[in-house]
Length: 283
Length: 310
Image 1: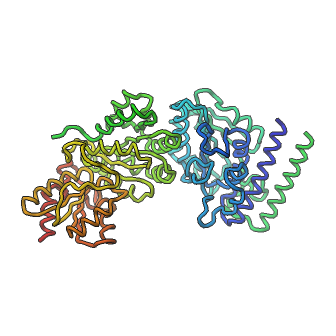
Image 2 (image 1 turned 180 degrees about the vertical axis):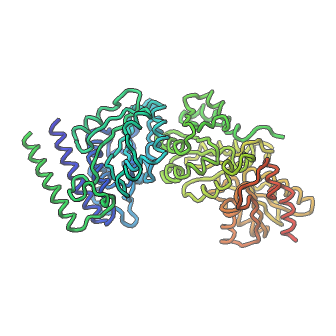
Image 3 (image 1 turned 45 degrees about the vertical axis):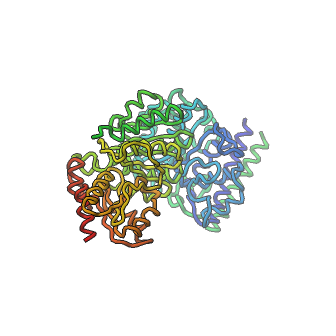
């Protein structure tokens, strides 16, 4: 078990390195949000979700909807790593005619729906979870949302429906990094008390450190947190996580690293990888 | 005079189809009464999904249901479905290519006295600008049935607009060929063509019959599918009759008339008139009164045709 957690920690660092190189190469991307959701997605894709890269349309697969579609870079790197498409295709990210655009694109195996317009994903996930129940299927539906996105009214329409229909196969995850493009979420449009809002809408709220792989693993593998209720994983994260000079800085929402910044970031991350390697060896 | 509204036919056909296809589901936004979906709810209580008054969520949920194998029919007032939910229609239905049928009920000026908030006179303009979305307006109850039977065999996201009240029959029965994207020639004619869709088709047919008595041969095309548009029928009408009138229960901007004009100017420019609601909040009133006010009734159309032929 301990080894599995260390392996996922290492995987998350590798994904961060990959996505930084990809964004640097493309000269475009949502760096901060992808770094903040990397640990969540790593746990989902390498430990929680029932998926088969060889059969992306397998009807019993768990579904993932990236409602905060702009933070797609970590997702592209993970899907490539798992073999949904060739890793070399990451070089086409954001280039002319690519299918690896700056938002999830369902022309790519492993992507369920085109997202990017904020506030859409949870409604889709509610529909999917309802379809599972109508068909007597046991797959789960996971929907990753941003915290800035919580200002979208449609999220709360979907939140109401999720609990009204008692969809305990539905999991909302909020990447609560507390920063949006303009600045701190609480300055732009106050969200707190966010946990109480979701509880009031009938969801079982599970707060978790969104960078603690073991805690994420326990929370996301403990679905449903309460039978008969949808689960909301409130993942407290740091925007730009893993890169010292990007952490908690709003300008890294979609800043592209310079050559020097990339070099520095990769150095920090490879040091972290070495440390994790040692930690794993010691176990 | 027919007393069966098109919405009732939509429900009847869905009940029939649902018996054979367990994936058919209906979603309503507190609209099962206005959509006449009560009988469906009674017949298939587990397949009528209520979302409450939440038009963004209803379309998103329908897209999620469709992606996972269901065949959702969303029945919600056209004025809200085509405006409040338009981003979900663009992204979750059209862009993601989900098989969602959007049934805009009480369309056009059906809610005559309720004012512009409840009129849907821009819906065709918006819907037809979205790639990957079909747009259909049936002319009467028979065509509504034919359309519903065609839609169930078509896996493309579609916006349908129907009115609230019974409309006079255009067809005597449903014994005719209905193909999505193919106009129906209801009257042959060589002097002028009237192209109509939805509830204006009856006025176009009546105008043509009145013109016949005046010695004018007026073709009538029922353009039930506005997207994909039957360009061939339009080009033929332009070439063979030399004059075209379009009539629609919609703004004169961006709807059927604009769609026809786009084809005419590219292929065979001829004099055209676009009849519909001008760029203003539509006047309050019953359908017949409003149609008459804006020249969308049979006598006005016949008079306009004679004027164009002078």
